[in-house]
Length: 328
Ligand code: SF4
Image 1 (cartoon, rainbow, N blue to C red):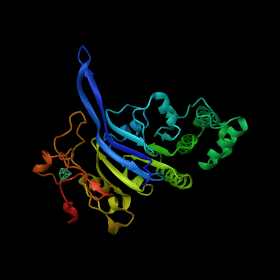
Image 2: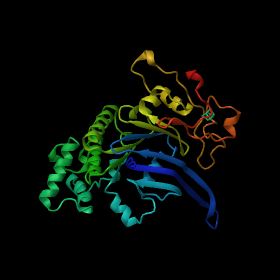
Image 3: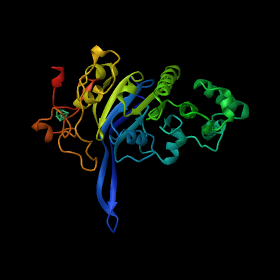
């Protein structure tokens, strides 16, 4: 029997209730994530890509237990984790870490880098004694390619890219199996972005980490990920191996996102598809295919019938069309 995937997300639902009126009753709900499923293998990178408001960050937060889910299941290494107590979930956080867009979310600016990195080691009882703790802190600084002298400085003394290296070192400290990178390079300059992505690729290979890389930018994930899941309005509309999704997208939304990715080879330039309008509100998603209000290929069936994810076992897409008109 095959071992279970490291992470399995099954039919995940996350709705936020909206309260209003004099009595604070429920007046609506934001359907941030609706029936979303995927798996992530040990040592694998999956990029979760979509526009702001697609629900991708909510997925990351529910996996970590930072926000309770409204339905569905989350499994880690064959054990269900979405119903664990807060105490057991805190313990499990040793195996699942997160790196945010803003390093200050995890780095206390009043602490030295040494103290920032020591905190998870102490919390999880991972380094007994000052010598063992310092040895591990130096090892972490080596892994993220920062000088050991960085230990005695404070996060604000570093550039944005260096601060993100410190945040990655902190995430690595408890030797996790999975790191969720939530827009972890979005705020960085292009050249620094590339350096951090290269670092993550190296660390992933060296340590056998699984990465769930959440990003609004398909171009960023191309050189980093093994598989891509494209999200739109709370659901996955396409998921598959990176090369297949990039070379032959099967969903019009993926096609539109890819058309904005710069191509180094002018001969391989894609036709630019500019989507009309904004993403509808997850408070009142459209009936049928949720993408039909912006899809250049929408037809009558799209407005009434929800397309299921279909296709092969590895590359799946949620569209009523078998082939995109541009690919025929
Ligand atoms: Fe477009 Fe229809 Fe496919 Fe939805 S189902 S993506 S509206 S063609």
